Length: 74
Image (cartoon, rainbow, N blue to C red; front, side, top):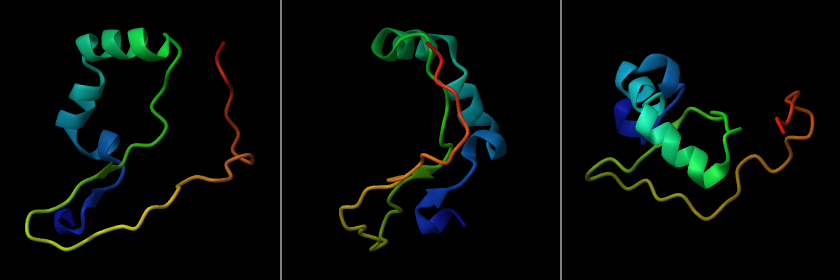
């Protein structure tokens, strides 16, 4: 639901977001900032809907991800 303040799997579900992420100019900027070896890890979009009170207290997501099988590209 769009009024909850988060869209999950946005890369896979929304064509316009996918086009933005795959935009060549954006890729160039990210490569300059992060290096060439970056990847999309999380594809959720968090936002504040107009007129909604959905304050989230300070917190840290993904504290322990050591069990996830991913490789670092060097």
